Length: 254
Image (cartoon, rainbow, N blue to C red; front, side, top):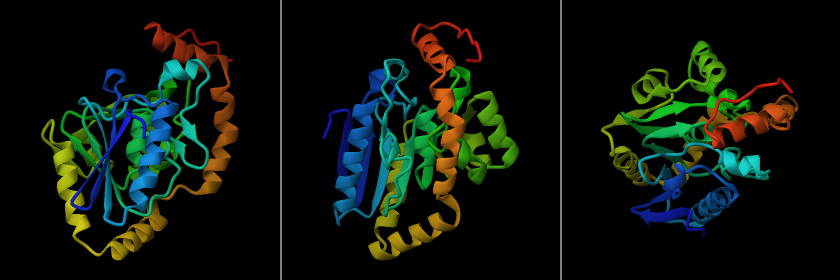
């Protein structure tokens, strides 16, 4: 297990913590593999009924490590998606405990969970369009299933952020806590879930997921034809490079 991803188990709840606070928990390939390994460990642990994913240092996740992307690295695991999780169907319920930013792939990572608990100061967004990219880890597909069509379209096309209270109004966030208390809120909820019959919890999660939350695999395949040319474009590299160099990008549309 990499030091970039921490795992803790208490009272039937497994907590996965992204541990790159100096990089606002941006996901590189090592983090993605660490999350995948942590999920496998907790899925196999019969004492664990519910899972939580969170981030160290007051930030949930700022998304893909753009510096690593500019070097040619893609932080995805085949069959599991971005951060080793966004395309993976866990058998156990997953709660995202969000402090600070859940942006780009970080927002998509939160969307991969079943329930989001957020501190009132948390912010959500998929700003990929600002970097010449597309939210390719299921974000643009899941938003319209989570919130009203117009709100989903506004977030996808502007790349703007929304705060936790607005995210709750739109149905993205389930609970809003005081700043610094998102993990406490998620733990309280997860422990309530863990008191129930594990087989019943798994079956109930599967049925709700099947009816609403699962991203159709045909959609994931279909989006590749639309998104792949964007990720291979000169604009994609320019957007990531401009971010790393702290300047405005010079778009060419190529």
